[in-house]
Structure formats: C-alpha cells, structure tokens
Image 1 (cartoon, rainbow, N blue to C red):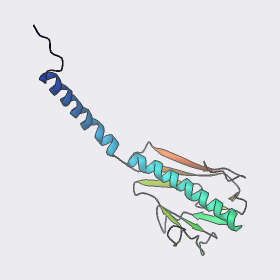
Image 2 (image 1 turned 30 degrees about the vertical axis):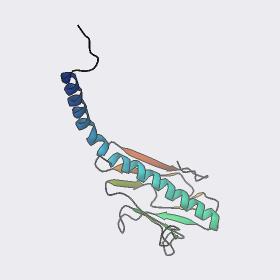
Image 3 (image 1 turned 180 degrees about the vertical axis):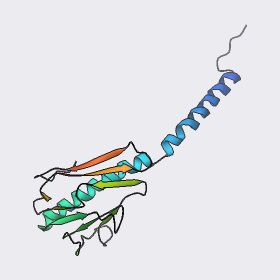
Length: 154
C-alpha cells in the first residue's frame, strides 16, 4: 500500500474553524483603543509638561501648564503667566499651545496651574502629579509625577 504525505480534508477544516474562533475572540480586545488612548494621552501630557519646562529654561521666564476644567474641559494650555494672558506658541501650528485629551480619558490634577521657573523647577516648589484615567475602563490609570526641587517629570 502506498503511503501519502499531507493532511486530510477533515484536519484542514478543523484547523481553519479553530483559527476563525480564535480570531473572533481576540479581535475585539485588540480593536478597542481605550487602553492605547490612556497610555498615549499620558505620554503626550508628559511631553507637554517637558516642553513647558524646556521653554521656561530657554526663554528664562516662568511657564505655566494651566488646566481649567470649568472653562475648557480635558485641555492643558501653556502660558507665560498664571492668569494665561500670554500663551506659549506651538511651533507646529503657530497658534496657542493647547493639548486636548481624548474623550474617553479623564485627568485629575494635583495642581491645576503648575508652572516651571527659569531653572526648570516646579512652581510652587512641591511635588505634583496628574492622574490620567480611562472613563470606560475604571481600573486603568497612569500617573505623571513632577518631582519637587528638580522638576523631573516621570
């Protein structure tokens, strides 16, 4: 009797069916961008705060990251004063530097008008943090910390 190598039709159908079931179960987990939005917004918030700090050092003047949830929810605006009379210009757009969070993300700030002096230290000189959380997934939150004295952002 001659022995043939390969798979039978039944084996191939079973493998294709199992692969289809696995894809149907795994795809919604990867397609949901809520987890990525939270991490992305936390990273962009860190970058915005670093930009404010570097602008303060480069221009030798105070720069504030203003978060006014009552007036403009889910935004952080960079200004040269605490009253936000003069805004920092975004070099990318040429307009005022405003960072807007995703709709599914909420931000709780320890200090809604955190500033940096000309040496990059936080104003007021105390540690601060921003908690970036996902509104849909209550268990996921990322904290952006600003250290006292040095202004180190992590």
